[in-house]
Image 1 (cartoon, rainbow, N blue to C red):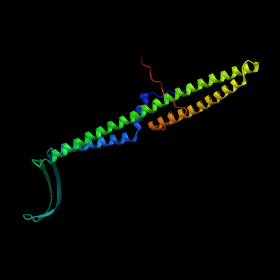
Image 2: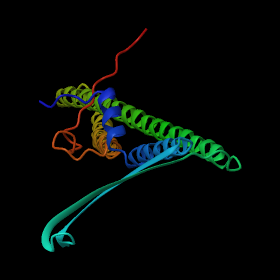
Image 3: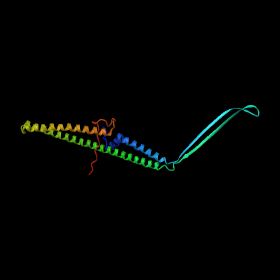
Image 4: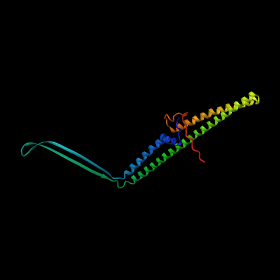
Length: 219
């Protein structure tokens, strides 16, 4: 039998898969990087450049008039640095702006997660309510069916009028219709919860097989 889905699991799955939460999380990471870059712009910059050259050839020695082999190598290194002394508070203003953007995106992520949590809780509770309604409808149908069977025996024995039996049979038909409606309501509630989870896996993709864990009752 499939393990019932707990509310905690439903919340974790929904927040992991929700596209709005994913987008908000990426925005938080992007704004955090921009803020970090803005703060690093206050630091001095240092550059190091190096090059190496080598040449070889034959030359005539003016003293002996003979060819001689010669080779020359050279190394060149450059170090440069710069620091911003004052630029009209542009860097400080940029830091403040990126910090506000980073904080705004964090609040946006929190709001997205809270909306998902609210939706999951509502849909989870809707499944529990639908299960209870179906159970009540089934019990009522069983009671009505037992009454019909008992009254049928009484009608056969001539102790109860047939009209009473007809009334009970009509009630049974209504109760059976209530069971069908309750099953449909439960199916839709489970389907809505699955859509909220956005988890197309084999374990939670079929509304008919989805079961949820009952919440503990507190005094």
